[in-house]
Image (tube, rainbow, N blue to C red):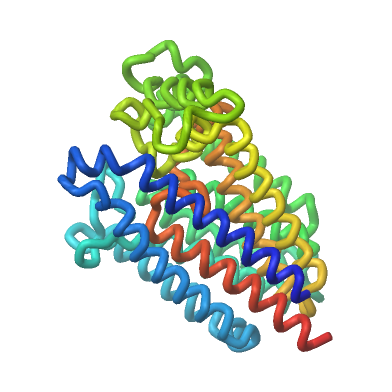
Length: 364
């Protein structure tokens, strides 16, 4: 699988390089105005990138079977972090959400670590329960209880977007591992009332849903951001207005270097530039699933599939939000958005994928 590993690595590095260029382009003027330093965000991004590369190398070097043995401690540690971040004066609160630890000048988001930890844990648990996986009590209930614990802690932050991503990938892992579809379908039906309450009984989320259906109903308020995203994407045309020439990043489009960076890509690099990014993610999924299909053991198959699905899902959600196809969610575009912790653990996921590919070569 050497060719697959090389292709996957090169795809990720191209996406990271696009991210570096576009973060500087989207943030320089804003950073100069607010921080008196046009390089403020790109310097921090490069620090996170170096940390991410280090974690990717660690993930590539660790023995996969050793990682499997530490699945439970990793899960327990991630749950502890999710609890600690909810405690006042320990977790950092921003705009009513308590999702970060402040470490010096940088922030750490434990839910990003929890995404990887829960996937390692579920891959280990489900691979050990191959013989009892179709049993409700012994095969289905244990992983769902742990998954529910993590989702509950993430929702308390609150972070519905991350919770949806984790639950979706978790259900895919359960289905692929051989759990009875009836159990999964019943769980989805049972979760609908809770999802309704989360979406329509929480005022700011209800407003997001209304704005998703008709952004122009509040074009100067809640609909402002998505309308500006439409303008950015529409202004790019086929070839774009030119790198660095975006007008929407001039204090029109909020979060232009984070959640809505794809809009700036569409404006500056046009349809061809935006489509190239989409193609790169499709190629990432293609090469990643090659690793899954050729992986040696059940643990490796489940973990690699989960990591590929997570990154693909987050890319789909982010691009869907910027294009107005999905309601606004706070998920960054993998490898490209300024996001700090997300970049570190996306690169960690890539390291694990490369590790699985390499270890599968050895066993074969």
